[in-house]
Each structure stands twice: as C-alpha cells, then as structure tokens.
Amino acid sequence: MDRRQFLKIVGAGAAATTLSGCASKGGKAPAEVPADKMTYRLNPKTGEKVSLLGYGCMRWPFITAQDGGSSSEAIDQQAVNELVDYALAHGVNYFDTAPFYCRALSEKATGTALKRHPRDSYYIATKMSNMGVVGRGLSPKETFDASMQIYRNSFESLQTDYIDYYLMHAVGTGSGLEAYRERFEYNGLLDFLLAEREAGRIRNLGFSFHGDIATYDYLLSLHEKVHWDFVQIQFNYVDYTHGGGGKNNAQYLYSELEKRGIPAVVMEPLLGGRLAGLSDHLGERLQQHRPQESVASWAFRFAGTFPGVLTVLSGMTYMEHLQDNIRTYSPLDPCSGEELALLENTAELMTRYPTVPCTACQYCMPCPYGIDIPGIFAHYNKCVNEGYVSASSRDENYRKARRAFLVGYDRSVPLLRQASHCIGCERCVSHCPQGIKIPSQLHKIDHYVEKLKRGDW
Image (tube, rainbow, N blue to C red; front, side, top):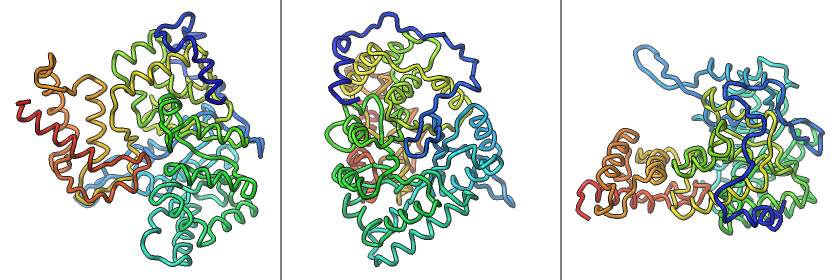
C-alpha cells in the first residue's frame, strides 16, 4: 500500500472527526481471549506461518532477589515462563530478543522458557548487537572476533542450534553507513552470516533499521546479492504520514520493502507507549467507535492492516497486555478507510503538540552520570498529553499543572537522576535511534522545572 493509495483511502474522511458504522464487529467481550483464532502471515520464502502478534522480549518482568543480606534485581523467570506458555497456547509463535535486552538477561530467560516446548512450535529472533565494538580503534579481525563471541553466546543462552530470524541490529546508528561497514563489511561479518544462513544455522537473515536513511537505501541496494529475508522497521500511524523525511518515515520504509517483496517486521507500533497513553480527548475519540477495545488496539490493528507485515512486535511485561493484544489479532479486523481517516486525524492532532520522541528503548542507558533519561522523558510526555505543561503562570490551570508536574517528577525520577545533573557530555546522542538531541531536551526540561519551582513567569 503506497502513500497515494493510503491518502486515497483517507481522502474524504480525513477532515472529519466522526465515523459512521465503525463499531466493533462482533463486539468481543473484554474477558474473552480466543485460543484458536490467531491471525498468521506466511513467510514467502519458507511458507512458515508466523503469528501476526510477535512477542518482544525486551521488557521481561523483574523481581528483587535476596542474596546473603544484599538485594539485586533479576528477571522473574516464573513469570516469564507463564507469559510464554500463555502466548504459545493462544497462537503466538514469534519471540524477538537481543543480547543486551533486559540488562543482557533476556536471551537466557527467553531460552529457558522456550526450551520447555517443542522446538518446532516457535520461532526465535535475535540479533548481532555488536554496536559497542566500533569506535574503539579495533582492527577488522578484532571486531570480527568480538562479534563471534556475541554470536556464540546467543546460541548458548537460547539453548538452540539454529536461529529462525537473525538480524544485524540497529544499522544506521552512530556514524551511519561507515559504522555499518565497520561492523559488518570491513571485517567480513556479513559474508560469515550469509554462510551461516547457507549452512542452516540461520534460517532467515535480515536487519533492524534505526538510523541514517542512506544506510537503509544502501542495504536495500544489496538485495539482489544478499536476498534479505525480512527487515525490521519502526511503523505506526503517526510515523506513517508524519515521520518526516528521514529514518522515521514509515511510509517510505515500508513501501521500499513492499516493492521488493521483503516482509516487514514491525517494531514500535505504539511509538514507545505513547499510542497506548493518548490524552483523554484523543483516546475518547477512538473508544467512542470501539468502546470494548483498548486505545492500544487501534495502533496494532493499523500495523496489521498492511499485507506486507509479517509480524508486529510488542514488549508485553504483564499478562493483561498480552491478553489485550491476542484479542486484537484473534482474528485481525483490518482498519476500514474511515478508521484510517480517524487515525490520520489523530496523528495530525498529536503532532501539533509535540512530545519528546523517546520510545524508551534504553539504548542511551546507562548514563555515566546516573541520569534516568527515559524516565524523565516519559514523565514530561505524560504531562504534555494530560495537559499539565503550562506556557505561562497566567494559564487558567497553572496551579494544578504545576503541582502535577513537580510532584509527579519527584515521584517518578529520584532527585539524583533528574535532568539537572546532565553536564552535556553527549555520550548518549550517538546511541539514540530516534536522533534525539538528548542533552538539549534534558536542559529544556530542567529549565522548565526551575521556572515551575520559582512560579514567577
């Protein structure tokens, strides 16, 4: 579906803010979680039936573990097992992880949970997360050797002898095309991965794109030689027509894959959770038309409406998130033209009042000065969406907004981890897939906090 087709569908209804006849078809009760109605997409290369809902294993639940009087956080393996068991029982068969997810514990936890089930009942996706080996002055052989350690560790942690979907992770970040070449070409790593696919230890080879658009175009130019089996992109109803001209232009990213017949794996369908936490006004506009369904379900239905999407990833920490997403895709009710128009209008309204485009991916962490970068941005965005960011102390709701922002800030972000401690070292900037000028945003938020504390503007 190209931009012209999309806008033609949206067309006449885009200016309208109401829909007619768009109530939920069938009216699924919230308590119902179908066990045998999952929507599947076919991998065009292998014919594999992949669940449209994919499990993103970057947000497994943690617990506090006690060890000899000291405490530390560890993944709650029992909870992970229960979530994986429930997902498999309800048709979810795609599990996406990476070496450094969940403080480098995700692969092991995911492998432990999945190992309890037949190997042919699920597909594992993991990544070559060798971003940290570049920029250190290493020789090509040294970067290759460091990458091999990452590769071997994935097999060991996941307790498997083959990977179903293997990705070159976060290409385009850092120095863009040059960083990609240092990670995968100068050291012969891409050739190695192609040989591993030929040997069957990798069943499908692709890449996840986060950065410089020139890198994306270059990698797709290699398709006739490499034959990418899939590509993972950021895709949601805001970025589709409001993503700008670069890396977040979801319409461009998707259309380039579609014209080559490369399946798309979707990440960030909720735009870092922002599409699940819309302001009351925007959320009510959606729920008015599907009152029994969550605001988040609209974003998942949007992503699933595109036929070139193989699976849509969701980082589901809690059972209720998993159940809600299973309902949405069991089976998928694709967005109608009128519903696409409503989502386009919602995206337009959202872009008028911009938030920090942070998706809480944690790539910027840890900050060497202990700052909770995603936590600060999450609180700021929440206040923007709820109308608790004031332009002036003369605003009608200033007192309420001031209290909500300051009290919530202290509760959600410890004092020593707040924006005031940013020294502008910029070590975080090159790691941000969204290209956020993080120190600038932190200083802006800190300046706003200081104005709220003074209350004199």
